[in-house]
Picture 1 (cartoon, rainbow, N blue to C red):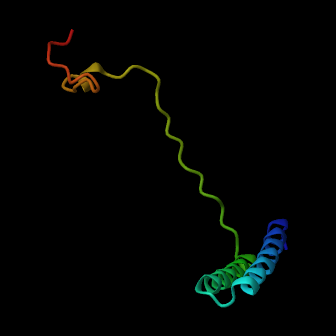
Picture 2: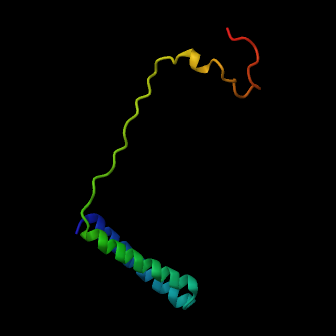
Length: 91
């Protein structure tokens, strides 16, 4: 078992103890039942992951943004935002 799964197991065990204390304090309240269900789901998922084959992490594609000036004709018919638009001739 890897270090990560050992830490996950310890965390789930600690959570199980905490949820047991909450159950002792609050009884069979709907919220407690949901916590118990969530704990069971964590245990199932952790068990499945322990036997799964890890997939390599997806590395996003790098998009290079050039720092060269853009063609001013791209903005020839655009309004200047924030000052009510430009209504005169551009120079």
